[in-house]
Length: 409
Image 1 (cartoon, rainbow, N blue to C red):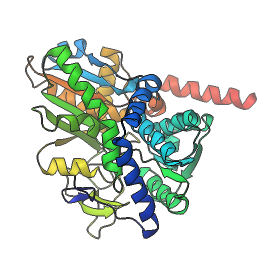
Image 2 (image 1 turned 60 degrees about the horizontal axis):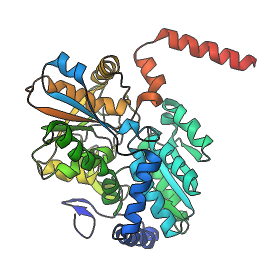
Image 3 (image 1 turned 30 degrees about the horizontal axis):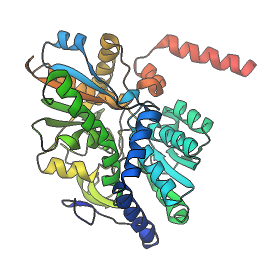
């Protein structure tokens, strides 16, 4: 990255003039904070004592035996407080907001995990919290919305566009443009104007740093391959970046969705529908039509349907440092079922993309090789979507009975 927040041709800051002074203040504050050992130690302490780090590296003996290929390990970010990797970044940015004297934070969220993490940290630090969430995503992830509200956050439904993550991010930017004097925009993924990609990826890199130590301890070498799902890219950056200059192959797994047609997937790589573009404050690969209009997206998971991708990952892929693949909705549900039934671990649908990609390739590898899959979140939040995808009729009957009983009460 250069001084302008560029990663090759990607990144940078393309923001309204009104936000320039606030963005520069944030850039200075972040650099000063990361040079302050007291702040860095405080972040590490909160990650340990509030969130529960380090998260374990779990060996999947049953799946390894069944597939007969590489040794399969899971990096268990689902065991973070709040149930996802999002807590790593939110702790860092929440403490930075306090350091800057900003009493209010705003956030955007898709799957809701970043919203919950933002609400949790805001409650702990005494910050006012507003979360923007697409109306469509609220329907898909209402348990997370419920918890955000219980934690004191204000959840604002976004009904414009496709009513998903891209639209929530647009509304959060509008809020920040009018409230920047007392508000910190707590972006949840490694996108946006500088220093957000660098900052989010930096706080998330604790994931990969732990994997380095844990892999050497558990199997005496770094993993041969590392897999992570890719939406905006925060968990992928977190586990990949510490390994960029190592021998491990880094594989990102995108949302292949229902098919290759526009609006049926959320792949920014391995598709002719993604082009270089500038939107939402930064330059990266966006799904666009020939006129440059952003295309609709689809994923069975609410957190992987973002129309763009981290400029860090775009640059790494372009330079051959990361290989991108995808998993379809059907492959994701198959991987979810395998991990749940054989290992007793319930992954989020986002994480199930990485599981699908990892299990698919592990079967073709040698038993002397090992892979690590980032389980970026747990599947509790997806219970309604999973039950629907599995056509679980008893669960649907339970919901109908519960609703009738609630109406009578």
